[in-house]
Image (cartoon, rainbow, N blue to C red; front, top):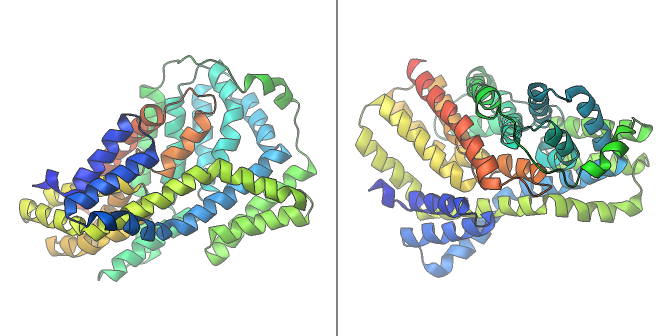
Length: 434
């Protein structure tokens, strides 16, 4: 029975514990034990398997720490305060403009200046005062941030999108279906468009009403922020950000880009070499917990793969759906949702699912474009809404700076509802008609 599959039991355990407000890291660890035990793995082998698998996200973890360090240096120069000031002057009393602007800035963090979530704990806290004064519902802001953190890399093969699209291409090739980046970019934008629909619903319907918050940590800095203006140091920081982007595009390494950006700041004296130790400590403090959760989530994925339960789950689905393409597509997307909710990474889910999905989809007669959108959507589903995803951890890190934003109920649940539902429906329909 599908409900007793180790993957399903494990993911439901993780989701349930998180909804009960247990720490995400502990929820992941307990879910790992549940999945391992349910599959019959020797109890003493579960944690070693998790530890061995943590290396799969080591580059991501290093990227977060280095980007966190870069973000600390950005904060030290006051650039974030200046940007917050400029934004606050433009959006005062303009809730809709503010939300679209936040979504736009988040989009830039994925493609143009690939610092991912590192900007959020730096830029968002100074803007909390503006949100409080405008009585902006932070659940809407969380949705705006999540949109910008996901839709660009799903839609465009640039920045983080280049990494994700390459993973899709290579995973399909490894399983007998030759495609190119041009093939993925020609169809995957539809997933991004479905997310935009979810963003519109969040902004204009779900969270349009005013919501009151207490002004706490950022109100004291409001007048000081207003006096900030751009300096030479700020321009050097922006050059460093574009340098990181160029390096990442040239050599495909986000950690290398972040490292060179930090070196540039040191060589131009935008920061002092003696400040690097403090900056690194700040970067670890800022992003270390998220980096470690990503490491553990990779280990969790390793345990899930070791159980052999994913192929078994798919086989059970095949036995149910038979030759019905619509039902098969629906089950593929649902399994992707479950796996990604547990692992917390669409990047890590695609290779797992492609091994089974590609032969199955080809056997059922799905077109190449349909297979691409099914694989990409199955990987993307759950990333928004997963308690262990950087797409939810990042927004919470900024919006909860004053302790008034709950990770599960104010970030995970809203983003899950507004993005996973449209992605699921659009991917299902499109896969059947193309």
